[in-house]
Image 1 (cartoon, rainbow, N blue to C red):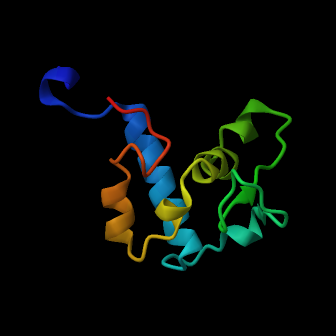
Image 2 (image 1 turned 90 degrees about the vertical axis):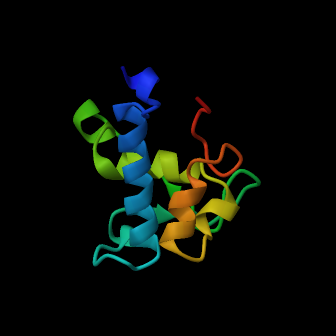
Image 3 (image 1 turned 120 degrees about the vertical axis):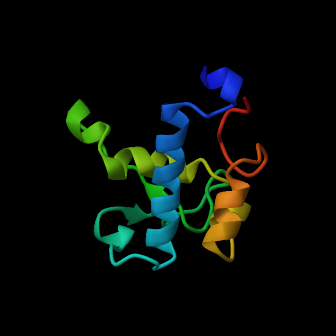
Length: 106
């Protein structure tokens, strides 16, 4: 039924919402600052962008699959063009484009 209706999977929708929340936090649109929970990358590489974060090390699966570790992995996988979108609407619209994000094209 999901294929017939051309809906995205629950996994893809959750990933999209994580990225939208990270964008809002980095852009200051919500009261939570990601720098309180994640450490920004200080030595940029060719695979990072200006808003990359160091993924926290996780000893347990409970922490590994919580918001900040899993969202930082997804966030760091985005392109520099994606994370520097001027507005939330532009960011959301771009999440569907394969060249804009790390999502698998379906």
